[in-house]
Image (cartoon, rainbow, N blue to C red; front, side, top):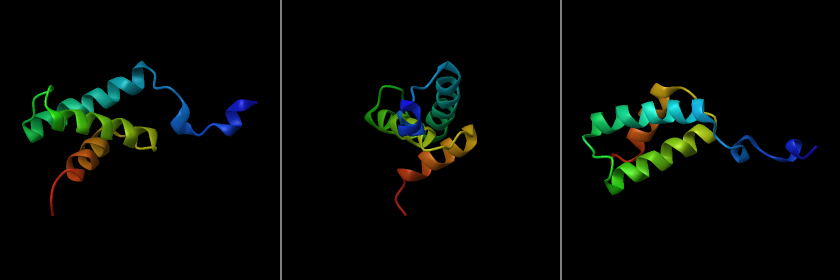
Length: 73
């Protein structure tokens, strides 16, 4: 009954979800030449999780969107 009141954003991520996010994160770290322990990497990780929760479930799209969000135009 309570499920109808919860959005998809409120559900916990399972191991498959986290694996997909991890692959997007790892690919983006290589592309942006970031180390895993940098502040920028933490921001990228948080952004990837947020994008995933918002419905972006394609690994490549996650990396593209998260990578572009931090760049200045």
